Image 1 (cartoon, helix red, strand yellow):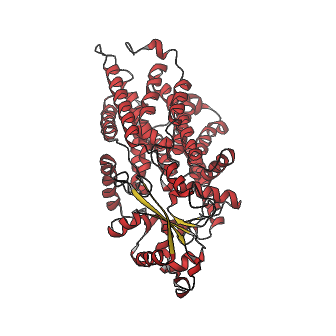
Image 2 (spheres, rainbow, N blue to C red):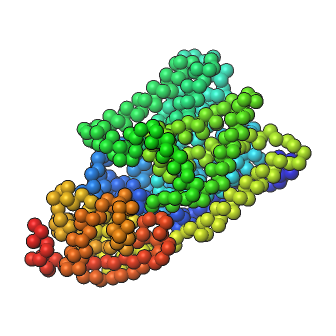
Image 3 (cartoon, rainbow, N blue to C red):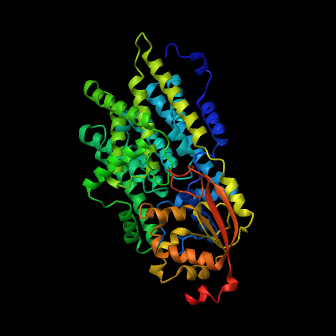
Length: 540
């Protein structure tokens, strides 16, 4: 990098930039993006596991919604439990886990860049590029598992390049006990992701395909190495499946049923169609309840980078280019095979896309400084995009939302409410609206349900009326409201007292296209048990 301010970069260490990233993000960790109910879903289960001292526990706020315990994300819950005990049960606690994972991901990304470029300065630039990406920032805030999977993948990829690929001669000539040890270690690193999320399959596929490629087309990888790596992954997977059977003897049927609802068993033709829709929705920011940051440029940039990488494969031997291209292809193949297409999982392609770019430009030395121009343009665009997006799409009203509820509803009161209120209530106090879709299946009326759970307050968001009036478009959120909606309205009118009404632009409306469109109302009703001789007993 001839004209780039080397004198500045020479004084900077990677941990300086990572620490700056961590500190800056702390200031808006709770505000960007808005708090999603899935964050409360995950942390709520962690709290239930902790308080019951039972890793096979299911969510306290789901009493009718069918839930089956398993261990496929048990390590994530254990990690959250550690942070609950150190800090407190609040959204900041769980988002901090993601931010720390994102910061560690930057470290391994930097270390991989060093191996690729053999340049500290260019690797620091690579670190800056990823840290400025709005989707990486988004994933580093959201209290979900994706950023932890990114961390595990980058750690595994770095280990592979450093300990296996870059030491190939020693690796191939070493004794049998030692030669397979590194493959086993690599399998252990990747295998740990199975305890965090089923998408462990997606992030494992790149190294599985690299091993397969090298076994078939190169003598560098022996079958014993391939078998050691693959067997380690398989043993860990079987271990988690075995534990899941201890939690639930019908684990396979229950988990398969859940997967079928998400499209896992759709035909490959349908999965291909949905794959196209997956990227189109990301490109145009079309979503149900999840916020999608503006990533049009990144998707086009990665497509162009992948195309140039493919062309380079035919023009010049470059093993790193090959491995990165295989990895990017493998991630997308993983999306296709799983077929779930969760928008948050797109973060898996981002580090690989930027690593491909860094690998492509590392040897550019044209007189008109093309490398420097490309880097400055990329950093400028990513930085400005992130700044404007964070300013525009930050939400500062979550604590006010909870404070409004706290004015009239005690923390330990039993309530029927949206799951995004969970960070206010004590464990086993909240019952989520998703349960109501299963009233008929459980031979319960709405009134029976209220009485059965001794619910004292109904926190009613305006989105319930919007979903009902827009049916069936948004039945995916709470199920079909039609069977119980009129009875619920009658119960509220006859057997409750309105004790508070307030507005909030974000949290009474989970449909992301409507969030912020206006001030949505929240009505808090107190159940009148003094009138039990009425509907409550008639419905018995």
